[in-house]
Each structure stands twice: as structure tokens, then as C-alpha cells.
Amino acid sequence: MRGKVGFVFIGFMLILINSLNAQMSKSQLQQMYVTYLREQGYQTNVDSDGDVTFKAEGYNFYIVVDEDDLESFRIVFPNFWEIESTAERVRAYEAAMYATRTTKVASVYITSRDNTSIDANIFVGKPEDFKLHFRRMIDVILIARRDFIDKM
Image (tube, rainbow, N blue to C red; front, top):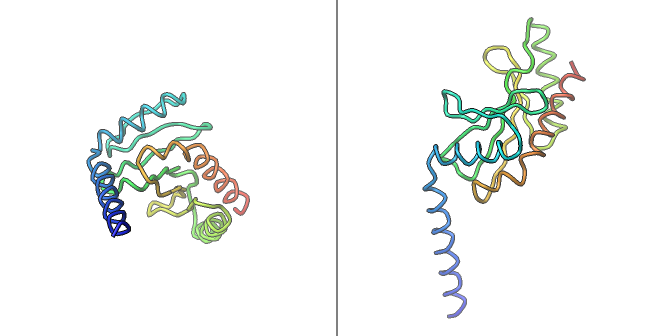
């Protein structure tokens, strides 16, 4: 009997935690990201899509603010390589596959506008847990960029 009560209690706590997380609004997420980035010395803004932009290591990045999935955290390094020909597009696809395959968490992809971007996407228990992984995600993105460029 005691085991069943324990499972019920744990289930109730998980529901309670998820409902608390689900109550964070887009503006609360934006504020949490902006506050953290500014505390770390980054200049930051919220763009017209509601994403949080910042500069790191001389490059522009943004955090995708998704209030519908509070257990996901995604940083994007957009448009770092412009594709100028069909032959270059073929090489870019090969380099993107290589960089994605060899770099944990990062995905290199070709956009519909013939630019190359990278993102790093992780799952977090609570939205504020992104802080534990933020710096490493930036490093991984830059490693994927280096690997992509080396293959090009």
C-alpha cells in the first residue's frame, strides 16, 4: 500500500512541476534569457519574431523563444555561409553532413535562401536549466562551423 501512495505522490509532483513550467509566458522566457545574457556580459535584444539575439565570439546568435515547449532550448547561428553556385551547394551539403555527424548536439543545415546555419538544441528539465549548458552550446556551434569550413 505504501508503494502505491509513493507512486501517486510522485505522479502528483510531476504534474504540479509541469503545470508550473507550462505557465511561463513568452515574455517571461525572453526576460529570463535577456537577464542571464546581460549578467554574462552579452549585449542582447529581442527581435521582431520574439527571439533573443546576442553576439558571442564576434558572431550573431539567437535563442529561439518557444513557450509551447519549455523543455527545449535552442540556439541558432544563422547565415554564416552563403552558397553561390550549384557546385558549392553540393559541397555545402557534404560539409554540413560531416559537421553534423562529428559534432555533438549541433546541426548544420542549408536554408531555403542558400545560406548555411547551425543550431544546437537540447532538452532541459526546467527552462532555467539552459544556464548549465549555454556556454558549451556556443562552443559546439563554433566547432561545427570550423568543421564545416574545413570541409568546404
